[in-house]
Length: 257
Length: 325
Image (tube, rainbow over all chains, first blue to last red; front, side, top):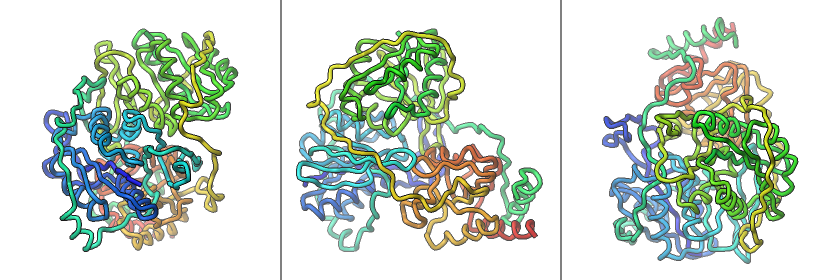
């Protein structure tokens, strides 16, 4: 089975985010980056499927030069090769614009299965996978917690709300968006890290993909910190002092102790 | 030109978020001076459409077909693309459900539009609609403006509009029969099911202490267990803790876990992504302990401690024990 996993590099989870001066995006200079978490689960699922059914795992990443580090880590975990669509200005991309580039790169690969995380931890549109499927004319299913190969294709377990699930069958080729927690993530081994150095990373300028630039139907006009909806009493300082203050409030004001 | 709300049902029962979307459609319509209509999709949706006809709407579309009995993204996207072609709405609204996440981006893409997903609020600026959505798991907001030609698409976050504000009225039901063929539907949905019965009923707890990613390692959960014990509370967790297997899935609070509303909910090292907030924001008193002062959990908290949980929690255990004598 030939599997392509679309991954994204995002700011590390515990980053303290600051808005840039133009209120157009965040200050990126002092951030560290990592693989988008649901994409890490998608990669792991791809690797496990390959181990079971043999084939190839290709990593596809749209991102600036710094994303090379995240791609290298995916190769160290066991992906066979990678395609890096280099684009410095990804912050201003909407999911349709990103998906058009990914779809153009995927077309040439002709995979049996495309996997991606169900959403990104930065923009959080939760749509890129579905859009790619539509652009490539593939059937899809989202928020997947299990993938099984069947005679005619695959059977997947979709997560629904409130603890419900549903099995869905579909032919291949297909696209799935993977939910966090579907599997147990592996660490890269020393051997894996060593091997990754000689694996192929094909760099493609986004302009080379021949995707016509069309005007987006939306525009991110301004980013800002959300206001508080509730009056929160905030305590800061010495742990013992703040603990004592909180307990007093809980006992005499909220009366929950 | 109009606003069109696409509402969700399964097996003849409404998804409760549908009426939030209906309320939003009426509000948008009033503010933009446009009529609002609603559509319900499925097989045999006449009764649901009649119920909608008792609301203040320009029109109700009953979109029915045998191939829409069970949800599939192919069937829904094709049917709604045809409806939109006929009704020509300016703004199409959906509840941001798991099902909408599955098909609405496909529908929008088929019309070369971008779905503005998971919208939390809106305002009208110079007669134009501005939609607000969240970035970075709720840490930052963005104002989204609509450009180019209609239609535009948006899905609305659970709880962001109030279902009890739907205005009553009367409107006509129009039946819409899309052209669908079974060959167009490539996925085969099977039965819905739930996993084994939950052994832990968090909804019965008066006090819940919930732990998140800030705890860093499985071994550290014990620190928070001690706090739960001191408070006589049930221990719960956000999704990543259960994904990692540090606590069983049945202790998960959030959109894919349990929805709770205890007297007190104490969130320890939980940043407060929307998937978690929807499961606990109805709690009577909410306490948050987090090192990041901008963590979205503080937006719903009554009391907050900004600090290192590894110092704060042991101090809190001591103070709680003292207070309880």
